[in-house]
Length: 233
Ligand SMILES: Nc1ncnc2c1ncn2[C@@H]1O[C@H](COP(=O)(O)OP(=O)(O)OP(=O)(O)O)[C@@H](O)[C@H]1O
Image 1 (tube, rainbow, N blue to C red):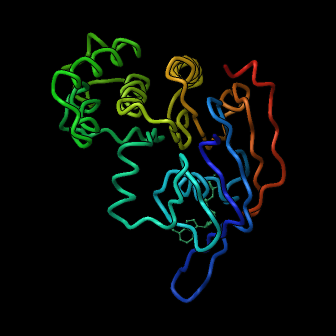
Image 2: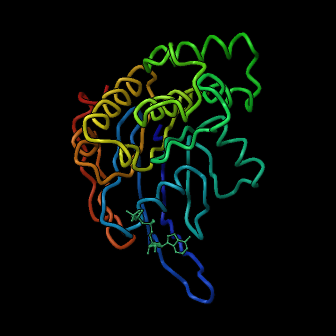
């Protein structure tokens, strides 16, 4: 099953009295267990597309199917529950809760989804070990480097075992060496957890690692490049 299917999707923002068309007639399939990059110039609609895939925003028309669910038809409460259980997010600004420790940041989505305490501990420690932060469990985000913060965000995104992880410019605030290490880690986690990652990115390092690239211009998909799946699994 494709984790994401779009049919004739349109998104227009309303800014005061002006309509700003952001996405027009988007038809799209995202393959399972792949690294998919959305590539395009500034203002082309990458973040808008990622926000629709991530159910952070809603389309004006068309069908948006995520993990087999018609998300445009869901109520706000159902959508919020759906996001918590099925999706993981990685942001360029990391978006960690500053008052929580590394451990607590990764545990947080498991509390939201009511995972029992013993299971939470097991899963958080396994993830922090996998991202190389088992010795930083008590540090708060302010006591970590940018690369370490992004590692926490990767562990947090995978905590609920989602089928799909969305990453908006995940290496934008990292130097190229740290960015490369983060891409390698995301690839490793993607393969181990059999999850689909969808990125928006200008970073050639992220684009080079992609299985699939979706090229977008002026709110329209102008091409899709898919590598052989042997690279992805
Ligand atoms: N909240 C909003 N209100 C009004 N217009 C918006 C809003 N968000 C985005 N837009 C417009 O929608 C279009 C697509 O924006 P979007 O942020 O998706 O592009 P992008 O490709 O992610 O750009 P960048 O690479 O600069 O982040 C642009 O014309 C933008 O000005």
